[in-house]
Each structure stands twice: as C-alpha cells, then as structure tokens.
Length: 218
Ligand code: ATP
Ligand code: MG
Image (cartoon, rainbow, N blue to C red):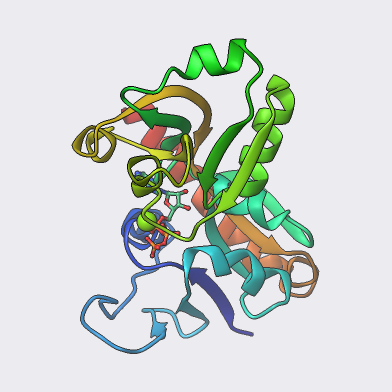
C-alpha cells in the first residue's frame, strides 16, 4: 500500500523536507533538476507528486494523493471540502494584507463608506474580510502580479500575501491592513485515513513531533 504525498515546488517543498527527514523519509530526486512529476523516496511505500500550490487540496480531496501540504490561503479559497486537517506545520509563514498605492487614503475611503476596488487572487478571503468590516468592495480577480493593479489604475487596493514587504516597497505600495496569519497545513484524504490508517497515523504523528521539536528551538 503506497502513500502519495502532494507538494508544490518551491518554499513548500523546501520547508517540508526537514519534516519528512524527521519521519525517516528522504526524497531522492531534486524537483529543480528533474522534469519528473512523481518523485521516489528512500521508502518503497512513499512517493511525492508535484502539483501547483492551488491544486494540492483538489488532489487530496479526490484521492489523487493521500495527503498534502497547503497554505491556509489556498485552503480557504478551496473550501476544505473532503479534507481532514490534522496539523499546522508552521512553515511558509506570511500574512494576508490590504495594500494601496502610497498616495491612496485608505482610512479616509473606509470612513466615508466609499466603494473600494480591490484586485486579488484571494477573492474568497477578501470577500469575507471586507464583509466582516462592513466595507463595500468591487472585487477584481487576478492570477498574479497583484502589485501592478493599483499602479495602473485597475484597482484602489490589493489583497495579497506579504512576508518581508520588499515587493510592496519596490512598487510604491503601502501595507495598510495585515489581517490574517498564514502558514501551511497538512491535509489528508478522509477515505485514505480509514483505508491506510496505520501508515497515515504514523506519518502524521512523526510530523507532529517534528513540528513540536522545531517550535521548541525557535
Ligand atoms: P506560483 O508562485 O507558482 O504562482 P503560488 O504563489 O501559489 O504559486 P508559492 O509561491 O510556492 O505558490 O506559495 C505557496 C504557499 O506559500 C502559498 O499558498 C502561501 O501559503 C505561502 N507563501 C506565499 N508567498 C509567501 C511568502 N512570500 N513568504 C512565505 N510564504 C508564502
Ligand atoms: Mg508565489
């Protein structure tokens, strides 16, 4: 019985490696150097599939993978249907924020009850945030380079992930409202959890111990 773990290339793959190592699992190929989308590990019964970050919940939901690692942002946008979320891995941490062009009076616009045009890849998170604040917004869905929207007049504001703030600063944008802490979580297919219970529980427990060990050293 093989366990399939869905990961996205980049920070999630990199930051999941030490957790896998703590569970005795080593990925034996480098995703940056191969074109393969299925990577073997040192264990015959564990393999990694590489998918887009936003596709991880979908793979796990429908059983294309037994488990995966996905950001809280991606999970909220997906809805989390059919997913068991046993563990916050505390990796790929950042925050979800509202940012505007440095000359846009965001607080004034909010106070006056103006309609604000907001461009974002995270329409569900943005919708919830502004609904909670009682602010009327027109949401414009984008798939990347959100920073460009306020600079070109496409939107007044963006909702985007921020970690250092360097990208915002380089584009003369101002972070006006950080509102959600983001980290990545382990997600597990609910049917797989029953069918492959022993192996999945063992993995989840090893990950939990590794996360606790990392937290105690930082
Ligand atoms: P792509 O960059 O390929 O278009 P993506 O942005 O969805 O796709 P990543 O950049 O690998 O994929 O991000 C994966 C996850 O890592 C995000 O869903 C989020 O939870 C987290 N993340 C995104 N940007 C940052 C960041 N700057 N710092 C820390 N974590 C981040
Ligand atoms: Mg990215």
